Length: 280
Image 1 (cartoon, rainbow, N blue to C red):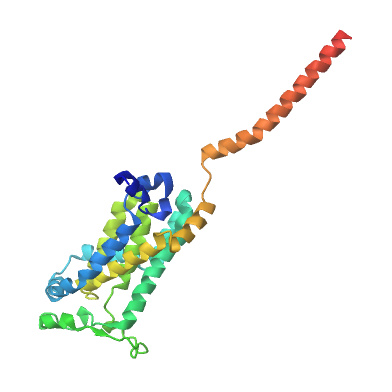
Image 2 (image 1 turned 90 degrees about the vertical axis):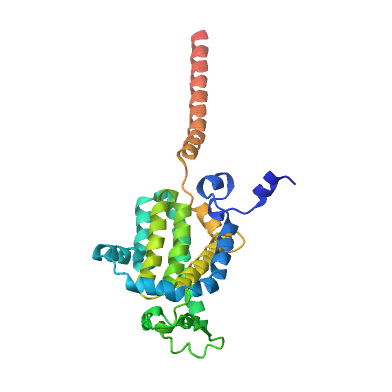
């Protein structure tokens, strides 16, 4: 089998499958899972520098304007901000309305997946102690609660991994990249802003943010792949697909054609009747 045949058989983003897949989604669906795996495998290596990076973020004092700007980008990972973005798409992007259900599931599902993982992983947030006096071993305080004995006392200060905000923002950004390709650089800025805001606020280590991005990409893979939720969304979106002007003209032509034919037949019959009367 040739290389071109192998390329055709590889799954693309199911949201934009078919002839226009390369135009709207240049990356493949499987790339989401590959990037997610790489990000998850890098968590142990990033844990080696978590304390050093956390100290740097704790020392740096940002100007008030930049600090407010980072707080503003955090709406990209919150329910109210996501609701406003979806509302703008509903009102101002009529051709993308059919993708709202997929975008909503991307954002909410990624946050839910991160919360489920938090139930099994106990890790203190960097803002709960003084990093300047802490040793490098403090970043390796990982406790896995496989029996869920501590799930009843869900203390958010000990649930740092993974970052739920980063997981939500990552999955939502992947969806917006596919739906609104012209705004990709804006969505990338928002995603980086969420990452920086979570570390400047002392809520997460670098490995926590990377782990959140990994779970967000994994959930995006589930929502795009045609063998999982992607197939369901494909059918829903194809049913809601707006009609193009060309198809509308074709339908109007099909409707007008019989009318013109009937009028032509009637005019022909009338002309023949007049000729008969003249001959008589």
